[in-house]
Image (cartoon, rainbow, N blue to C red; front, side, top):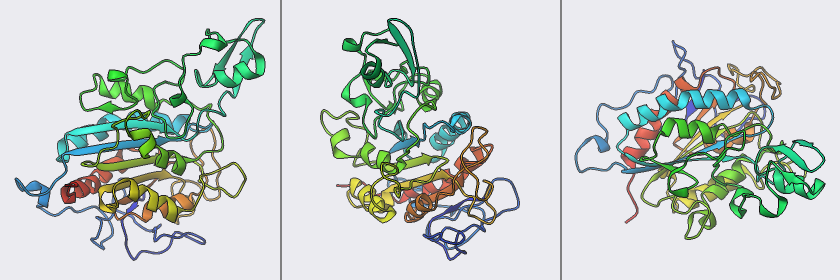
Length: 360
């Protein structure tokens, strides 16, 4: 799998591609290659023998906040399965490599839940719908019958279940995941971490087809959701690096009314950096997106999202967004295994962690 990270002087990503993303990063094995931010070198990631965080008392982050933004539309079952399969190895490598051992992990869908409920079957007095339970308000509005075993006037939902950037707490069948302390994110002390991540990352495929991954990202780190009384209170921390992982098989395109995130990639970049107090170096962005516009992309050229996980829409805007970050890495959502991508990306996360200077 080809991958690219940071800024470099490689070729452009094909006609219309911007942001300096190179399609020509290759290596002599199947892991692909990424560029160490600021190194200017292509190919396999080569970390210096010693970084500031390797020396006692010098630099290094102590905390890391991981935000997984997961497309929950109809074509994403295979991609979600790949993500879940790669997570145990990813988090194990993270804990063995980077200085931060205090971490938060949150998974958010790419819709607000309000458009959910693409699968609804009703009997004489009740209805069953997916994705449960966020499909129930719409189902109750349309049919006025009990939904998924709950009366419409007593649904097990809160305002936090139907907003962009919400931390997911349900699996694809509507069963509540066992997140500790009633949070919408996990901490390093989460019991059964891998199993819990599997639950929240199995986000389902009955979400809105008008995906808005950039909006979901920005809302997830907003002051409204992270401040006192917010739905994800305490997830984003000033003294932690932020690692955003976006996985989607569609472009975040707002040319059609009602679809895509508002604004342009430059605005998304500015807002995300602002959420980290203006410190762009404290942000790592990993994008598992459509790469059919790359000369050596894994996704077939001009392909569209489909249920077998092979196709994906070329994501030029998301590629541009990711590549604006010095600690930005692009991989292919069409890869059959995400483990090599995450294994290489750990080096970029480690670099960002070592260089991090906490506020204050």
